[in-house]
Image 1 (cartoon, rainbow, N blue to C red):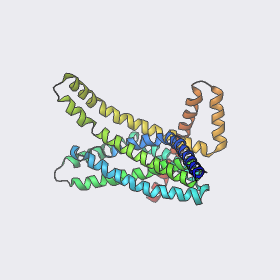
Image 2 (cartoon, rainbow, N blue to C red):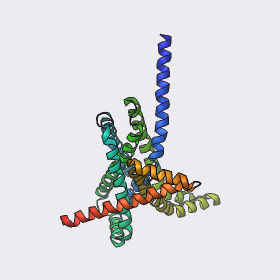
Image 3 (cartoon, one colour):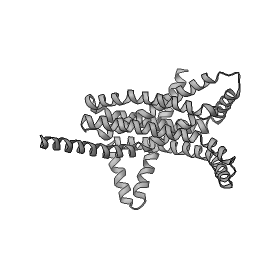
Image 4 (cartoon, rainbow, N blue to C red):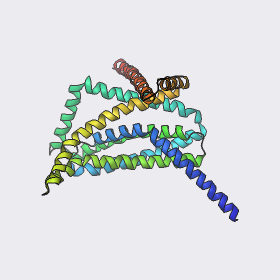
Length: 299
């Protein structure tokens, strides 16, 4: 009996070790999507009245948990009965990430007036006392939850690709762990980011000169942080999406890795990243062109 118990504990330790290693690998691979998820969700809840920011973040967080409850079992089912579908799903997800990145760039630089008009219209709606604030919040929450579903699907698909071929228990543990860590991490950070200006204002009103200086610094840095997150999120779309597409074609992936290794030095890593981003940008532009053509034909 003692021997059986020791064997059982050894098996549990082995599984936990595998789970730990795979979770670290999956977290590293999904870090790019996490950055984009963070930036997009912080933007989604911006513009809400200050006293309603945290309730809106919490509502979106609950929606994200529901998304994960749908996506994790679906991923486990695919990994168990349709494992051949993992790579095509990853490729589709990578192409969609690249498309989203190109769409953001096109909307910002080619439709600047329309983008500014949407922002101004939303600000007027929030400021107008006659407007139903609850309805505005519901629209924002729905949009944020839809965005979260897409990005969560990317995270789960990448994680599923990482644990493919492992036991069911290991797959379930890693997928559930990543889903939980990412959701708590993203919305915890989003809550902190949207309240940065409040923290800065509070500190700037304190008697201490050091606190006032820190508060003014936070107030000055908050808008730049949002811009930085947006830029990092867009870049991550091309890096992650392009990387998925490149590794989905083994011959292309090995060729890029061999070329990057031959260059040596710092270009070993930066070279392959640059190529992945470039392929992601081209792929996103192609998908965006096809989508716009289909829209025109439908109209």
